[in-house]
Image (cartoon, rainbow over the protein chains, first blue to last red):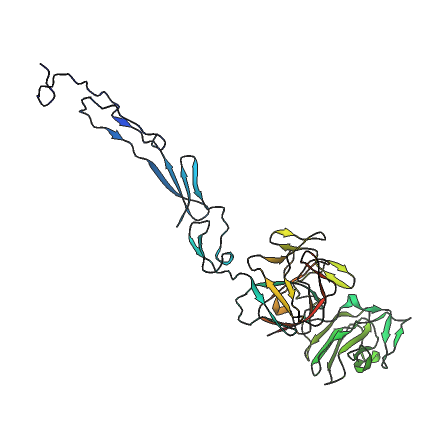
Length: 69
Length: 326
């Protein structure tokens, strides 16, 4: 007899999602986590985009936008 | 502090740091951001035009132009000392009767015609270098000798002593003076006023430096026009126009800097009513001069400008301008 995690009979056995559970930000591509049809019981961490602000010699501020490394 | 650069990874999204926008270069009322990223509101008055009334070019005293350069050729901008030793005629003196005579025994000299104003007092000063007569002669508008105005007798002055003559120009009849003295005399000065002031070389106080000559006129070498050095093969935009009635207009492209290259412009404070300035406004030929005027009035007597096919005014005779502070 196959039960899902709520104890309901489903008739099939779902695999457990094996990660990744942490991904870096990307400014260029869409990243897809393959969680469809899988059991997920971990938190997923998405790293933020890095934005730095520094004063420059011309009297203004330089804003640098980068992906998290 | 404003944002003036934004980079997305290695890609430049915006970069204002090399921009040159400043308020006085941006049309009045328009907005932009300068290279620091701060907002700028333009103050520039575009294509301001000075129009003429008859033969007068009038620049209002409270003009918004606080730095107006007009191409022109100053002549006779002398500073306070009008005694130009380098322009003296050497080896000759002028007697009490106005006769010009060769001096075979003593090294004498006399000045060019120095313009003077009726009723004004002028002071001639110097240090005696030779026991010779020192005379101030008066001449009329045509340069014809009228009379001796004053003199120092050679027997009353010693070498090394100070010479001092003050004359008041009569109400009528005298337009120029010549001074006859000795070549070894030093610190020679002829100045407006009834007292001697500290000695200055002829030309001191003039911000215009003389570099070269064309005919009898003195010229600068170059004018820097908006970063482009002009020379004999140079070109500058037309600044003068003349209508069917002969009135002259000077169009000032105030978004452009007109500056004398390598030289400072003459300051208005150093231009007196006795100075004459030739306005060319146009290149070709010769080179132009620049002077700075800030609330002055100029009178343009006769002059000739010929329009060439390309719309540029060729100067076929100089525009003579009497300058006075309004």
